[in-house]
Length: 75
Image (cartoon, rainbow, N blue to C red):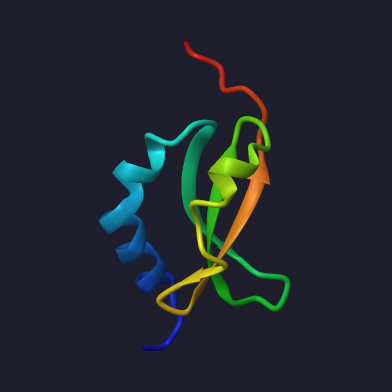
């Protein structure tokens, strides 16, 4: 299957609720790799290796990247 934004969104729909329950995960979205290809972006409050280890480098051909976002504010 071709790596596309829609494919990344389908993966997030399928697994996002589970991923949001992991320690330090603050958000999940679609982004781009340095080469401009769609990717799944996992935002973490802090870099916890055990949380990163849950994710493979790619899912169904879509790369997984991490962003350290820091704490989220609650309004």
